[in-house]
Image (tube, rainbow, N blue to C red):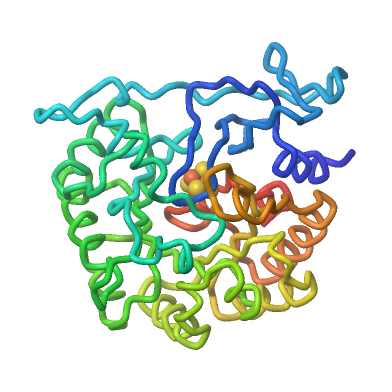
Length: 353
Ligand code: SF4
């Protein structure tokens, strides 16, 4: 099995009984996983009881056989043990992703969360219901946590995402205030913001001026039929509006400091996904190719019974997109901050993208 095949298989089939100190349960993005280093590269790997993979003594086993690959758990960060003066655990304000990314959802609610509007793969409000997080993170709380995470745990980049608000800016202005507050106390921490296309494109400049180094404007699929089926609310924002926002973001943040998620496994045509990714690359936008992850608590699983894509499909698409990225001289690792820079939820880094 090549390194890419193994990595794609792990991304889809996960590891059973993976008990590591840094993990996620529900929330805005990929979840129900454990964070490890696989041969030195970050991996956010699903925890699945039906997986043929397990870890024994820092080695990866497939059906009990040692695969010769080292798996090292990401250590629990020290900032998780702290609380704010008003008694909120730092862990509820921001979390460690991979070995060095501080990630937060600044507003944990979404106007699109009604069952007929919600993205079917999303469980943004579930972690709120379990009390694992708080609804709105205030700028000064984020600054306090970021300062500690840098000082105690050597965090090198931060990601701020948000649920979509009812306001015209779809939540981007609160993000800008949060970025400015964090940069005021840890000026060297690179921050990526993630949001829907903000209604007023000038907001993209506001985010940059607040101190964000990169931006993710995540479309998830470039196929309008897939968008309508999987993201009924979000698909009301047209692909043209996304293209305008990406173009403006590349103008403001620079080539390869803008990214978008593209999910594999929503019923899209693989060739169309790859040619769409090539168009994004041409535009200067990094297509972060990620497998759809069936998560309990989402409509995709609870109502539709959706399954993860085949590892071979993920591998094929990832390899083809990585080739396009290489030809354009774009690497995820060259992003100053963000999911492309982290890479743990995708297989692209293993494929050389
Ligand atoms: S790729 Fe993004 S969502 Fe996944 S672990 Fe890294 S920072 Fe978190």
